[in-house]
Length: 412
Ligand code: ATP
Ligand code: MG
Image (cartoon, rainbow, N blue to C red; front, side):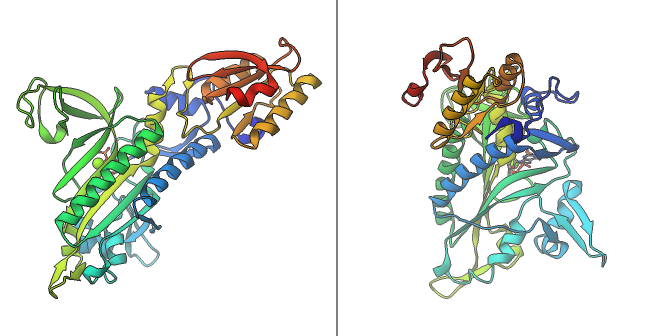
């Protein structure tokens, strides 16, 4: 891709309201652009990364026999009356009326819709278990939209719903999805800690959150210095220095975390209120047992930037980088340099995602933007090098080598 055509509107200064590093960088690197409070456009560079995150999410779900689908964002009040949440949800729910004065909401989550979609179908134990997911825009009129994609009013979530005959089967799937989440975050470049949490608005009997430890996190995690125990402090009310409730020997420590995922054993909350029943082997009618699993796709993007950056720029993790290689021709008006740059560009593009900075800009501008944008492998071509030679930089290790251009593939 030619940088002159990609639309990467880099900025010298971050917007005034950008408090955290990732917000500043994502604005300055031309990744996102604010439209209204908590509502953002994903610009081409950001969209490429989101697409990669979504691909990883899809692969790890499809591998575990979950099927992708897409549900509507606009949801009728009747369904929310059935579950009882029209009254319960409060001002975070975006509510609207159609031209005939009927009430609707913009989906903050999809338990009601999915239960209505499958309830007639899953009438027998023979059709269970079932696991359905979507990647979709969600709407929540947050009281304090903050830190750009971290707490948006419109954001992208992957939500999965599973359906079972009994708690034992739910437990098996719950553990399987828990493992999928850990793998997804690892591939995205994020280490997560699993902590138990309250079930909140969604309901159910047990829930776990996936936390990225970070100073900019809005949650406080209570964790044990000895065993694996962790909980959201809002839920466990543990204090620093308390004895661990799990191993009874370790001490509790507190740290801030970003919640990137939340999984719930819903049980029969929605199937009972919305009459999603199945007939078991003995011919008895029972409510279907459900699980639901949310992963904040756009928040994950922001967390990845927060964790993989300095004040001067981003360094994308290998699996989600928008491009793998960034070619910087420093004197593009020099025919020899120009020809060599394009030859390398064409050659590497066959097997890699390559960005070439073809803009008529000074070297300083190109380097600054490249540092900001954060592509991990950089090839610099300039007049100061011997003809046919290029500088190859591995930004993960900071290793720099001046090599013959025909040796690039070998080094990569
Ligand atoms: P929070 O406690 O941060 O408000 P939540 O517990 O209400 O989040 P869930 O309903 O569990 O969120 O949603 C699943 C996932 O969606 C969260 O783990 C988070 O990653 C993401 N998410 C939730 N709200 C937002 C938001 N306003 N902006 C961006 N991502 C969000
Ligand atoms: Mg949550």
